[in-house]
Length: 421
Figure 1 (cartoon, helix red, strand yellow):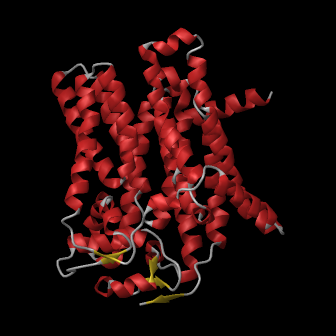
Figure 2 (tube, helix red, strand yellow):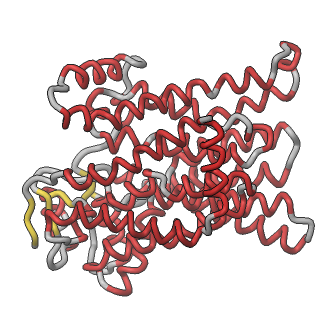
Figure 3 (cartoon, one colour):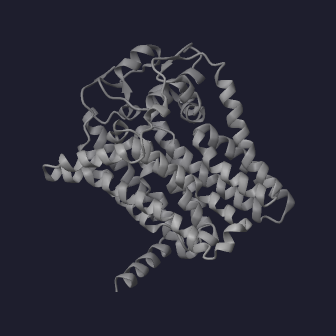
């Protein structure tokens, strides 16, 4: 009975025009922006999350009516400072937390800074949000074209994924990365399926271009390209091997080039220092979380973390898919075993979450953003016939529930003391 209702519901969603969902997305997105920024009189520069200490270091980057937080701050401020450094000739130097780490993702600052350079830096936040939305809508439309008619509802789950929404609320690069990954995969599929030589070359060139953009947005894109390169190499697909290898080489070259930039830093981010014995800090965090639940509000605040735990379990269970694909031991000694490479990105995500320290767990945005990579890879699985039957719908459902919780979260989320320049 329940299964029948779910099937009917999915069928109804499949028949709804994407236009209506785009309208609802815009209403939803601007609602949470409205609820969150009301505490700063709807000043959108709040979304940059600039800390007072860093604006003092980068005093030349201030603009009228900028919201500056006394104690808080987030990564969006560093993309803003770097955008000013790249585009504004009057900014000779900037100070960030880690020059290497921020320059590693220079593509984010290049994208965010392009429009404000022409229209004015005081419009940085609104132009950044609009650019995010436009690129995201392009990726949504392409993803909608790629999924078959029975899975159109997955495109709508993609449209309302919380990773893109939260990225826009923090003005960081996650949404750009998610969007360009889908765009890349669209061009890649076109390249591999196109019979016209001229169009094939066009899609191949576009795939290369977008793959380079991806590694400039997040170095973790290499965790996708490495297994794809190895798999293509093992199957002697020369063009595809080159396509996946090139962005890896570009990212390695960029790491070398970074050393020639002269940017001040107040501390160096060392992710290796956050690694702990697997599950220890994670268990400690959840134990503390349960012990500190004393009211209904505490229960409500803990729900996203328990959804995150459920997502982790569902990701771990995905490895059973590989076992189901190869029931015979003899299969494990064939070349098919290399399809295990497809689970490498998911393994990286699970490993990253279970080994990070307790302090990292305390910031939900930090721990939650790691899951975006596994989320993207599960979207990729939907487009592969062999894996489509093993799609992790538990993950998609849990992630969608987090999206729903964004409304009350941003309605009650307080930013602490701040000033307006």
